[in-house]
Image: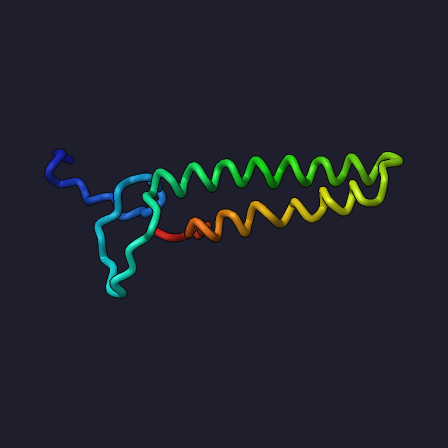
Length: 94
C-alpha cells in the first residue's frame, strides 16, 4: 500500500491538543485566551486538590470544627474561579 493510498485518520482522539478550525456559528468570543484559561484550570485544579486534602486531614484529626468547615468550603471555590474565567471541561469535545 503506497502512502497515497492511505486513508486519512478520522479518529478525533489522536491529537486532542491540535488546533481546531473555527466553526463557531454563535458569534461567541472568549474573553480570555486559551493559554490563560488553561493556566487558570491547572491552578484551580491544584487548589481543589489541596483544599480537599486539608478537609480530609482536619476531619481525621481533632481539628477545630471551624477549620474543617473552612477547608470544606474552599473545595468549592476553585470551580467558581475557573467558571469566572470561562473555563469548562468537556472531555469529548473536538
